[in-house]
Length: 118
Image 1 (cartoon, rainbow, N blue to C red):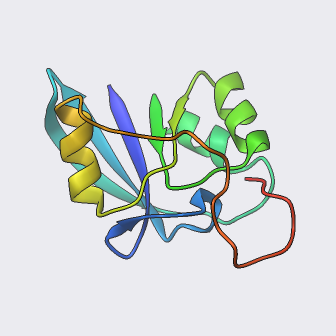
Image 2: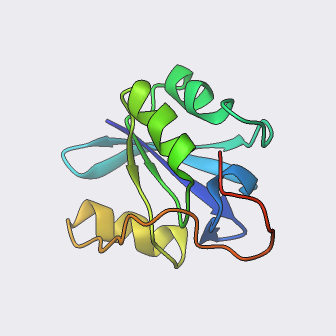
C-alpha cells in the first residue's frame, strides 16, 4: 500500500495543493518498507490527483483539501484523509497504529479569499 502525506516543512500541509512536497511511504503489514519525497509539481486545478495516481498512491493525508480535489482523488480511486495538524512523523505513527483522528473537513486555511480547490 502506498501512502502520501502532503508536507510543508516538517508538518502536514494545511492546504495540500500548496505543499512543498509529498512524502510517499510504501507500507506492508503496517510497517514502512520505503520512503520517497516527491516535489509538488505545482498548484494547478486537476493536476495533483492524476500525478499521485501515476505514482501508485492509494491514500493521501493533508491538513486541508477542497471538495473538488477530494472528488478528483475519488475518481482516481485514492482515499483522502484531512483535518489533521502536526508533524508528518506523528501523523504517520498514528496512521500505522490506527489512532489517527481526522476531522475530514475541507480546506481549513485562511491565507486567501478564493474558494478552496486543488
